[in-house]
Length: 237
Image (cartoon, rainbow, N blue to C red):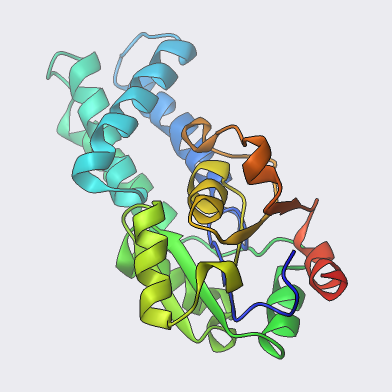
């Protein structure tokens, strides 16, 4: 347990501070509607499996985010139709992507209050995956940017990525706390590097972000039900 307060606290953005996965759930449903209108007869399960498989395979090419998602939908549509998908249908996919990129940013309960309160006592940064333009736009539209001294938009969240960020910040991993909803991206890489983490489970999350915590990892990870409990947790620590 840290003897004194942390030198740096970082927050994840998507599905930690603001809703994100539900937008992708809507995107998948809209995609199925587009395919049905184009005459593609496939089960919901088959389409979902094909989209997920294509998304995961494309992470190494496009990273994370709406643009990657849209390209994966287009690729899936081409594969499911043997290349016969119409330009009109693909235009609908592009329109869907633009809608997702510009939709309102809705914060989770307690997010604004937690970030604002902690910014008064700790240096805060945001570490989030995805497209640089989209993520920085969401930070601005969320109204939370003034509370963060830095914004890190990364392609992947690995132990090496976190260690590089901490090196630039001049902070030891043992004095660093990460707050996030993804065990795979926000929790495991941090505790493996010697840092601390607060896990805030999201009601909706992409299956790719699921992971299991070892007993050793659990010793450096705290779990809370919502961000409303975060200031109290840190005060207790």
